[in-house]
Length: 481
Image (tube, rainbow, N blue to C red; front, top):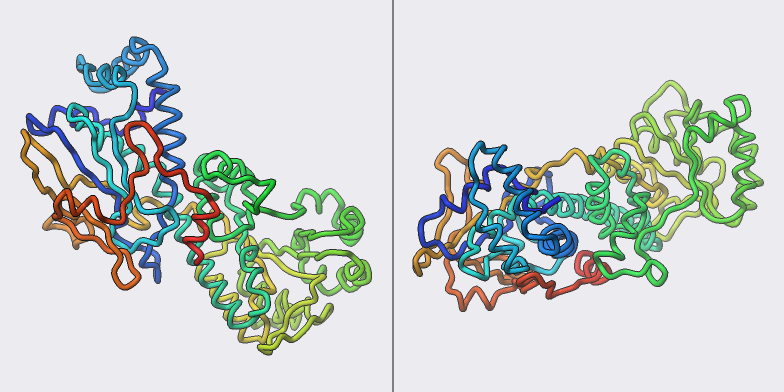
């Protein structure tokens, strides 16, 4: 598809709506409000993907490298019938003749944690006749970038929680946290690109992921090599069809066959196809010798019920249910008590829970395990679409707004501040400079061109060319340092 069709319909008329003599439009991308409790900084991530995949690849192959007559005729066909007008396409023809996008993007380094209301990047046209292009690209930019930023931010919040409890209950095992939050979201996302963008955001904070295309995407867009560095990883794991195929009457036989099929490494077995408690208290004791004899870990995966109660136990008439998965595994397989006084399961056995996990539930699981004397690292959390799909652009109030224009050679500092709003939609004004203050990124607006050029924002895209080509390794270092 011609990428100029990837826009909101109302953008089509804006070129003629700007004041006569407009030659420059300068805009910024900013998270304006947090709707996630406890999160006041948003992770900036995804711009390099957008630049490589859309502003370079797709604009070249689907617009600039196509015959001008073909792309302009197609564009005019759709717009004419959409608006019911004889649309003037001279500006589209001029852009094709130019052969590249005359846009400059300046941005913070990806992986930066940016306070709410502080811009992450700016856009401005580099040729006066293409002033209309800056905000024409808003729809595409917003559509692609809000989700990786949002998922990366939420993943970082999970990482903070898991790091905190691991530090309090199992300092000897802090490296495990990179595997403790595992991406289970792909099947529940709104499409494959959504899965990849969100999955890459998750993988900034964690190495565990079942969203396989993320590995390919990081190689394509963020300079990784899966043969030389850890990008994402997972383990052999069953699903309910495997357990059902083995029959309910011989579930223990299915477990035994799986242990024989995988004599080494981590093996995750979904264990609540029928009776989780029977698996924990009858089958596992019978298989104890095989489990302890393996060169690896058997991971028990409950997949239904209240995650907090299933893992940690709850008040129940049954003493089995009241203990929960982790305590029952401890009763059978034991483990060690670390220097901080918390119980750590035998390394041959473990648990993962991957249904309906949220930040609140993750916190509750860690806290209740701690209260019971267990290290938080005894369980892995599968973080799925219940976390990552229940978000929108408004989760962090992302918006791209113009704050400076030039009309007939005159610079105008512009802004919006609706009297009917609570202040969320109030924009910056004029040119913007970003700077560091007491370890936090901040901004100053209404600055001169010279002052704007000396801020933290760096040129990453100019006139169709990528200037900074960052790597996953560097981005992770920024985020997790």
